[in-house]
Structure formats: structure tokens, C-alpha cells
Length: 481
Image (cartoon, rainbow, N blue to C red):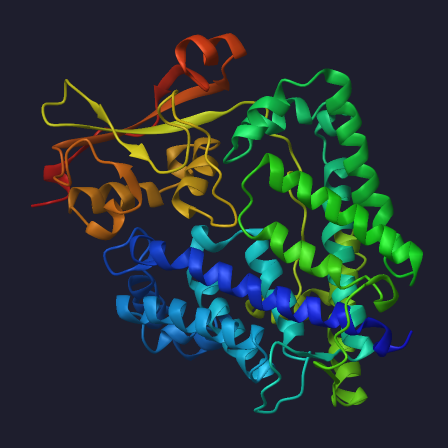
């Protein structure tokens, strides 16, 4: 394989990485205060102050983050703006490696301090892909108008390995777990209405006949388990593999809201297509990279064992054969440069939803309405991706567990009692107009899609059934002296 055969692929990989960073920081910006500010649900400043006293100097290695030095609300917002600026400059061809380094350090700083709100697989995927971005161009201050360097072949192969691991492991985890719905091809009977944030297309696809869902599941397994082995065969086969993988991502985009996951994945897929299949000419903008082979081999040698470790562990979860690599994997973990993947390993077969209620007298209760998650049965299922409303997402995970496993919800309650403007901004409708009620509680409902007739006659997208009270009833006087 010659690197010059993948000039356009190199361009797409570097530009898609820059675009993905921009979306990630842009999505985080309006939420960062409510999630992580000093009056946020999980304050980064508070977290680091506690760890500073408990961990000591080792904290910089165990949790590398720029926020150890400054973690105020202004710093968090400025970091988002700086990430957007750096990713934009990388996209237009200004000192790409330096800009990607800044993006990677900033996003790593957020992920390491973001706790449950920044623990998603696409956050890790962006950082793993982003680490390779540090080796996509020379470490020079330069200006290539909307251009990119041709990758060293070793770096290009490492990008393909990330894609292989992502897709293959996502297929394997569905089969090695004990969830029978994946094995009997019925998982999609549940997926479209139980996924975290369904969109309108998901409502209608859910109504498709059984044979359609089974066929779709079989197609998904083919793409995730078989197609990845063809991405290393240059030419027609490689291009066909890229086409199939992109098709799967487009179908996911059409039927769900999965943040910027699909953007990053499609970018990796475009890196498979050789120049001979493109009808565009980039020779005036693309220059060969000057990276030395020793550096590329060093990166290759560091990442390949970790990649093999995660693939092997996905296939043989209980095997201890590779346990000798655990110290090395622990060393890599804080930097998120090699990660396991496997979305929807166990299919959710019901949809509980948490409804936040407030009351002034403890008798009459009013519902809060969140921006994107199902609340009001008449609420139109949103199209929100590639933005990720992280509070709405995390409420979906919390509904599948008990209140005791999600004590961050008590922080949410406390911030609402304190009338935190930042947290209130994450909620669409506050029935108390920004003033805190005397009591708050979380109720648990079971949600299912309505029928076509119910949608037509009543205008409801969801049916819901009350289950039980999810949390204790909290009194304002217990939080605000």
C-alpha cells in the first residue's frame, strides 16, 4: 500500500476529526454550566477540590486534566470556545497537529472530570481517534488552506484498526451476552422505542412487520461482524466495505439520536476509500507528511497490543490469558487512547421514564418538562443529534436503575431548591417559573409508543402507566436552611 493512494482519504479523516471536535465542544457549551459549573449538578470545581486533598500529586497522572489549575465557570466555557476555535483552525488547515493537540487535551480534561455525563463510548472514540490526529501532520506552524497532509501508511492503518475494533466489538458483545433477543433476531422489536431519545422516524419504523425487524437485525450483524474484515483489502473490496459501514451509520442517524457518534464513525469509514474511487482532485492542497517512520512505528507498537487486548477481551470476557497486559492498560486508561466498544450489548425491553414533580403544599403536584426526553405524551419525538443533551440521556440510564445507584439526582434536586439558573436552563418548562417549590420528588412511569389511531385522534406519541415513586420526597427546608 502506498500512502499517495489515500490522499483524499487522509483529507477526509483529518477534516472529519476536526468537524467532530467542533460538534462535541459546541454541544457541550450550553450545558457545561448546568452540568459542571460551581452551581451545576456535578461540579468539577468541587470534585477536584475533594480529590486534591485525598490523592495528592498522583492526581495529575490518575486524572490528567487542565482543570486542576483552573476550574471556574468561566474556564469551563472558555475551554469549549477554545476547542471550537482550535478545531475550526485545524479544519481550514492551520497548524493541524498543534490544533489537534489542543482539542485533545481540552476534551480529555472534560472527560476525565465529567463523571457520568461524559462517560459515553463516543467520548472515548473521539479521544482515541483524536490521539491519532496528533500524528496526521508535521509539528509545524503552517497554513494549508483547507488542505491536509497525506498520512504515513502506519497512521492510516491505525485509523482502520480503530474502525475495525469499534464495529467488530459492537457486533460481538451482542452475541456473547446472554440476551436472547439478539440471538433470535427480535431485538429491534424493542430498540426503536426503548432507545434513549427516539426520533419521529423511530416511531414509524417500530410499526414495521416482524420480518422487517428480523431482516434488519441480520443485516446489522453482517455489517458489524463480517464487513470489518474486508476493510484491510485495498481497492473495490475496501470501498464496498466502507459503503456498507456508512449505510449502517446512515440508518442509525435516521432512526435515533446518538450524538456525534455517527459523525466520527462515518469520518473513519471515509478513510477507507482509495483515491481511484473519488472524482475529486486534491493534489493542489495535499502535501506528503514528513513524519519519520520510527515515530510511527512507536505509535503502532504502543496501540496494537492494546487494540488486541480489547478485541480479545470482548470475545473471551472471562479469559485471563492477557491479564499480564493489565498494568499497561491501566497506564493507558487515563489518556483514553485505547478503549473497548460495544453499544447495546443488552437490549432494553421496557421503557421506564423519570418524571420530576414539585409541590408547594405536598398535595398538589406539578410536572417539570425536560427539553428532549419523553415527558408529555403529546410531545413530538425530537431530532437533536449530533447534539447530545446529557442530562436527558443520563435520566434514561437512571430510570433503569434505582435511586440508590444514581445519587447525582440528589444534586439535581439540591440545585433546583437553590434556584440554580444554570441547572434550570437544562429544563424546558419549570411549572414554578424559576422559583423553587417546597417539595420535589421523582416518579417512575412506563412509556410505550401509542398506536396510529391514538396519534391521529388524540395527538399522543406516547402512552404511559404509573409505576411507583422513584425517589424520596425531598423538602426544601432540608436543603436550604
